[in-house]
Amino acid sequence: MKKQLLLITMTSSLLFGCATQTFNLENSNAPHTGADNQQSFFISGIGQEKQINAAEICHGADNVVKVQTEQTFVNGLLGIITFGIYTPRQARVFCKQ
Image 1 (cartoon, rainbow, N blue to C red):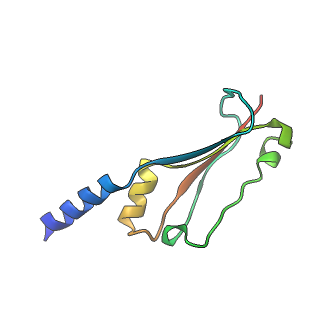
Image 2: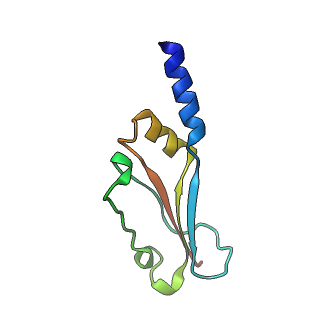
C-alpha cells in the first residue's frame, strides 16, 4: 500500500506544472519594487477571485509596470498534498522607481 501511495504521489507531481501569467503595461525591466503576496484559494479556486489594487500599491496607475501571477512548484505541491482543497498562487506587482 505504501508503494502504491508513493507511486501515485510521484506520478501526480509530474503531471502538474508551474504556470505564470504576466501582464506588461510598459516595456521596462523594472526591478520588483511593489508587492509580493500569496493568495489562498480553496477547492482549486472554483468560483473564487482575488483582487489587488496595483495603482494603490504603486501610488498611481501611471507607476504600474507589470502585474504577474504564478503557480510555483511549492504551490502545486501544496495543492497535491491537500488533494486540491488548498491551492495557493503568488501575485506580484512591479512599479516604476
